[in-house]
Image 1 (cartoon, rainbow, N blue to C red):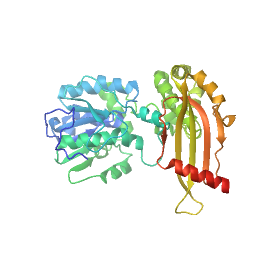
Image 2: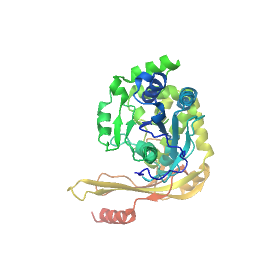
Image 3: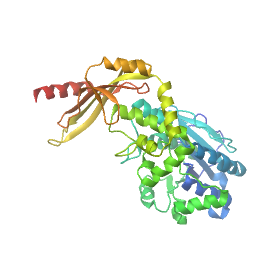
Image 4: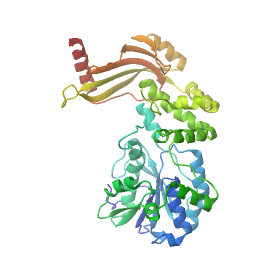
Length: 399
């Protein structure tokens, strides 16, 4: 983490002595906290000049969320002169000192949200993968946490501060986990737990204060929002209002699914099936247009799962190599695929692949095929892959 002794490029020169730093996610919970503090001075024990509000943009928020923040929250921040810092990434990887983190705006009179820069979806497309449900939310760590940490360190400059997070009354476990990261300088603070406010109470407060119902903050393709029936239905309604967001989700899923038929945004189903089932024809039309307009490539995909080095008969790591062997229009690449090695197969997902080696469960498990995909995925192989592949193919011949 940046020790706070160096000013990050783009940060204002003025130091307002921040002792309260709010990670503002623009959703229901954190918006309720911020609006209450701005409209009800008795709800806080600090002066607003001691507050810094920081947002880390993923670049893939729904337009409605952006409009709500610009029309409701930004005017309040301007009226009260609250410092608002907007940050984002300029590249996939960032460092604790702030390399790769861009300060998009730092102002006490913010006029608009700045969402340009390296998007989380750019990262997903380049890798040909999707955010994963379960374990650490690495998408949030990369796009938000790793951006916020060096900025917070810089604006607090070694002072003790309270770090405000919008965990609502039903999220005590998340607050307890966050508190493990407290230090002699940083103390996590969860006002909604102090107030006993759950998400319904937060939503009602915002409606009472602003006259509008706030939507949940999320990337337009968020896998976590798709884990429940209610979450999927909410996304359907948002896609109906913002078809371009739905089309973007389908595009991300299509790229990842082409390289790995098991990768979809919905476990046991897909966003494509969700959109088709809901009759979202405009979403489908915009998605089809995206496919028609983009360059395509024939990719060679190899995947292997090694034997465990510590457990007999156990599964070790899974690694993948992706390499573009030709580029051109979609029609050209479909013809190019016909010349590739392997058995021509149409998967259950409707995607044509030329399968050189079908996936097996016997270790080492190998998979090798050629497929046409939008040319957005970078050539990439895990270090050591070629050696492992050679070893695995030799084992497969011997056994």
